[in-house]
Image 1 (cartoon, rainbow, N blue to C red):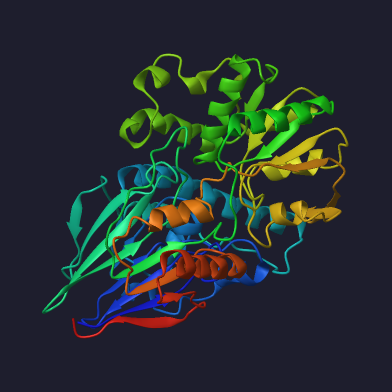
Image 2 (tube, rainbow, N blue to C red):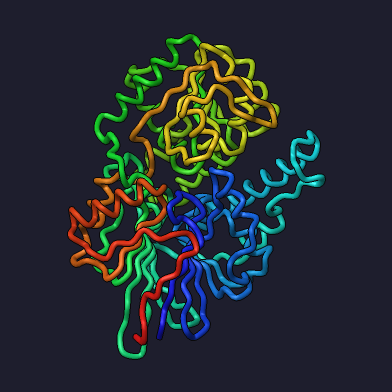
Length: 467
């Protein structure tokens, strides 16, 4: 049996994760199915036809629910995919929330662009619709960590905890040839060690072929005293006499922030000010921690009755009308809203109104991909375009390192150190070029692995021949 891989995304960029495995028996598997985000040259790829007919793909395996790993699912269904989609049970439930929300945003943005006339297209269309999202959700097949399933071509796969978000997984795929078996491992996104809410990434000891992410492959994040550092950022923002707006990923990051806010307010390390969670998706996601209690560290006592997420200073806003009312807040309030990289969602409305307020603070708490609004704000651009209007940035812009759900260089090396021997081929993915190249060099120098490759977009490799 011959097996090839083609990189349809996440090659020298952090988004658009898609890896196509092609078997010589004409069986094709897509690992992850993410949207490109960030730079326009990447976002335009979402609109390009796939390099393969979607109807020829037999199955899709997902590592986790983040949109850069799952958000292309409705589009690929629209293009003709009609096979099973495999993921963990928590990922399947999260996708019910994320894909519907993503489709709604696509439809709203197309309608808004049509209404305001700022699109170059006379009749702007969404990348996919709610109907497409529902079609994808109907194809989901879920399983728990550690259970083994078999695909139609005989390959077996299992999911293992990646410690990144609720339900995130390292994917292990075992391919049985005529004479031998080979093991492929896809890291997905590797999480942090000693996370307050999630368990450490699971150790994997063997892989013939390994794909590992490199989002922070060239950085070492602060990992000690994070509560105190977070408190300093919050106190500094409130002392300026305005409000703090935090763009935050609805899945994972928002729940970690709420954990910190409750801890710090109860300890008296930050003032008890109202925290407004203005993200319907984040609200729905937070409720899932009760449903999937085995996926995280929180005890039943912390979730049942009045849970840590039901703290008296937390206010959950679902309606658009309530969200608009937050514009009237002048000081001593914190607003958490998605999306985390300011690519869409309600946070854009808050930025539209608050970037011009000198006493306000925009606090970033996560990775900002190249080309996103978040990255441009962090780079110090004086204005940012929102809803077709250039908005002047007069507020304070702050960035806290270390709260990312991605492992940094040292944590990635720690996870890689669990392998008992070097894989025959190691591919460095899901990172901007400097980060991926730095990660490759660290692996060569620290682990003494030789065959380490940073692939190009659409590049193909033969993994096995005649196994």
